[in-house]
Image (cartoon, rainbow, N blue to C red; front, side, top):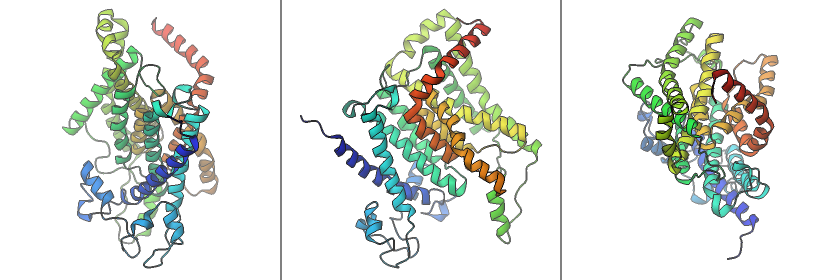
Length: 417
């Protein structure tokens, strides 16, 4: 069978990505607004209801509400053919639509080149399209989700949790089914790390159950502090009630509720990891389970989810506690949890610490222009993740000597072998 040239894959994946970008335009517009049925705006939480909101009504002009022809929906080409105007009312159609479609197609093509041709890929090796396409598709699902979250967060300063939690089940299933130790993109952890993931995962389920039963209180149950952009919007609107204000003491009290939520995962995760590390009988029981193929892949993805969410959540809690104001939103926590479930604990940590380098120019501009102190973190988390997907191996190789020495020092201090 003759080998298919790379250019064929690149053209196909660009077209596929452009189609995905067309769907992302729908997600970006409708998901924050729940356009389909106004009566359902307050309780749309299930998957079917959310899908209904995204799929109905069919694509239409936002100005005249006329449904679009199928050929007007062809990514990029449809907009160009229409001259950027609605076929019926002749009102302009935002250029953002073809830009998002083209950008998504280019991203699909770019990552194909980097993964399958250049070798800047998961596992630090050039991938084979026949053998390794599942990890590429999962990564492109993540990139698409990050692009949608970025566009929504940049405009509205929110990240709908439906976006990251749509990705998580696919990540858990794929890593459970596909991962094997040594395979590119595989997340199979060591036995102690798998124990940490298992214990913390059970602890997280316990916390969710206790929260659902209202044994653990929800933070900001009646709504969190309003951001600067929301306050300005309310000030501009006549007849609106004044925004709810939170004192620094009240902010810290809400953070203590979130700390309480995190205690069961921390206690059970660290406890089970230490038990498998220090107690030979427990290790003999646990090691064969952790080394089972699908169990290792699943626990590796869970560990990435927990690390991604925990790192951001702890910085949110500590930052809010230190400054007496909400440091970052919970949407960022959910977003990085999804990134960790797909890419694993190492890559998600690198992605998080790369994000500020992308946001620092914007932050400096806000500081000197006095146009506000708040900036959406989602776009920079997305950029950090996009970079880490390509350059993680190079960054890890550069940092590994120092991290290895730090780990050895820490282990000696605790008396671990």
